[in-house]
Every structure is written in structure tokens, then in C-alpha cells.
Amino acid sequence: MEKRALNYEGKAKTLYTTDDPDLLIQYFKDDATAFNAKKRGTIEQKGIVNNRMSEIFFTLLEREGVRTHFVKRLSDREMLVRRLEIVPVETVVRNLVAGSLAKRLGREEGGDLPRPIVEYYYKSDSLDDPMILEDHAIAFGFATEAELATIRAMALKINDVLRRFLDARGILLVDAKFEFGRYKGEILLGDEICPDTCRFWDKATREKLDKDRFRRDLGNVEGAYREMMERVSH
Ligand code: UDP
Image (cartoon, rainbow, N blue to C red; front, side):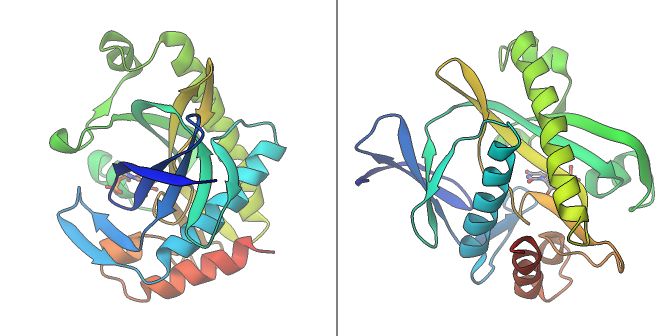
């Protein structure tokens, strides 16, 4: 697979075109940002962890019948993916109260939810990714009603598969952010699934093993990413 031009440079990943117009190379960087890039830093080896962990999760999900953009891992920091027309909506699924939900509704972090909550955010750096309703996504043409129904069902299925896999490895999936896109008339899961995009807590100690260690200056950021990689590898 020949790497051609830079297609898109994001905060944590870079996309390159290839000699196949349907495929892109997704390159994982060590750059970390938080609070809409107001906080910046580097997490050593993060790109390698996120690439390998995403491969593990995408492979698991494909096996469980979820269609993803993942084709194959090419190297430590690169994977080959299908080129999606990205739906400009971030879908968050929550199993426990944390982060912005705790803040917005004045709830303690770690509280149980009787069933998963699905939320949508409009992907816009200039607007700080505002939360939206399905109605906004439909009215502003981000996705059709049918696509949103598919996205919601896929997000809940993905949450279910990941939650069970992680539970068996002593990890609580607190919440996660997914991105979807269109590919040849189908909706596929895109982006990455890793400690940058999910909250992972140790089941026994509730120790945070994700990007909150960077966001909140909790220390041992690299150690947490390494620990998560170790847990999902067996
Ligand atoms: N998340 C993400 N990218 C974002 C915002 C959130 O990957 O731009 C993830 C985050 O890691 C967490 C989940 O989505 O797993 C829910 O995040 P939340 O709404 O609590 O926002 P935060 O506290 O990160 O601002």
C-alpha cells in the first residue's frame, strides 16, 4: 500500500491518501490535547498503544457483527482504514456518571446508571463540540433519521461488546465516544477506540486508566496507557 498525500491532520492522528481511493492510512501521534486543545502535551508511546488497542477493539467488534472502517494494522503507528464520509456528530455512550455529565447535572462521579445513556455532540472546534439532540442533527442535515437510528443501535451494541470484553479483564467501561461515517451506502464505525476516547476504571480500585490522568494532572499517564494495553492483550 503506497502512502501518498496528507489528507487530514487532526490533533492526535493524521490521515494519508493511498493508491486506492477507497482506503486511507491513519497515523497515530503521541500528541495529546484536552479542553478543546487549550491544554497540550505529549504522552510517550500513546500512538503505538492507541493503534494496537484500536486494532484489538475493531477486530473484536467485526467478529461480533459490527462493521468498522478497520482493514489492517500496517505498523506500530499506522493502520489501513476505509475512507468514510464522516457524520459530523460524536456519539457518547455512558454506563457510569463521569466528566461532563457529573458537572452538568451536579452528580457524583462513579454513580451507577440504570441503563446506558446515548448523547450526541456536534463536531465543531470553534463551537467547542456542543451537545445536540437527534432533532438538531436531522434539521441541520448532519444525518438522516434512519442513519441516526442505525448509529444509536450500533453505539449501544458496541458499548455492550466492549463492556463485556473489558469486564472480563477487570476494567469498567465508564463512557466512550464513537464516530461514524458513510461508506458505499453503509454506516461504519470509524476513528479509534482507546484511552483517549473512553474512560476506563479498574474494577476493584476504581483507579483511572485513561486520558483523565492527563486532563486532570493525576500523574503516571504513560503507565495507565501501558496498563490498559496489557489488560486488553490477553
Ligand atoms: N470524549 C472524546 N472526545 C471529546 C469529548 C469527549 O473522546 O472531544 C470522550 C471522553 O474521553 C469520555 C466521553 O467521551 O470517555 C465522555 O466525555 P465527557 O462528555 O464527559 O467530556 P469531558 O469530561 O471529556 O469533557
